[in-house]
Image 1 (cartoon, helix red, strand yellow):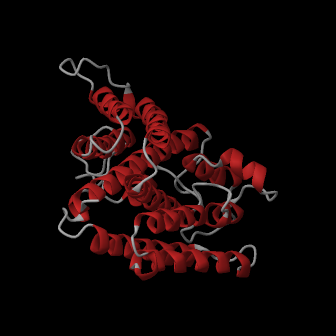
Image 2: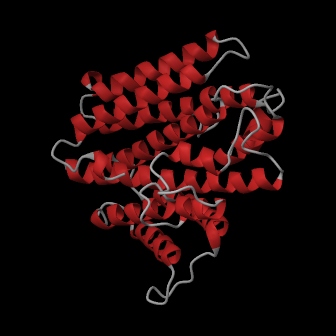
Length: 313
């Protein structure tokens, strides 16, 4: 496969996953406000300031009202980290690889983008406000991934698409956890941990898999180590190893494959060795650093000559 095609598919996956998790995080802010939680409370906090810290690339020029902040996180095309900007980049990437992805997948991405844009020229009515837009994007990205799973060949193209999504999901979960587990006085609040689970779509999975009450530490362990939950960091790393192994002609000598394999083994060791209640912020930081190194190794091995990844975010 041409490095340019692999690069576009990889970043198509990353942009779709980032748009979805941005939508989920914005929904979590509304949930927190409905439940009366406050950014000043300890442990898991998902106010507007926490979202900006988590997403990183959204930087208001001046202190903004909460509503303005949420619009910048969702529907502002000038903010490179906004939900709409990620969907726009996903559409541009999908347009360049239309001969690789299925026609149904392209139609789903294109329709989603046009609907978010809205306006008379597009002929579509955009969802009113950041909350409805977030719900729409969450549903549409699930549809797009479902179409990809049912309509694309399970070849190198699908491997790179999945790999991009898996790295982004892992990174976003770790970003959320690092904000959630930031040092603060007081005991973890159950309501806050529930907001974190809702932000990653793992609420019902947690209730089925874990007997401990849903406060910060067991929730964090679940989102990092629970391999039965597909969006946990450990499950994403395992799937990432499978994707790169299938796509690489020489996986035994592949730096990305070896680094992912080492990270998977380290996460398994930490799951077994760490006692309940152990501090997890350091693990989140180290794992996020390893994922950044994997992303760099991927660019060097597979995308030589393609557009630098940093220009696509």
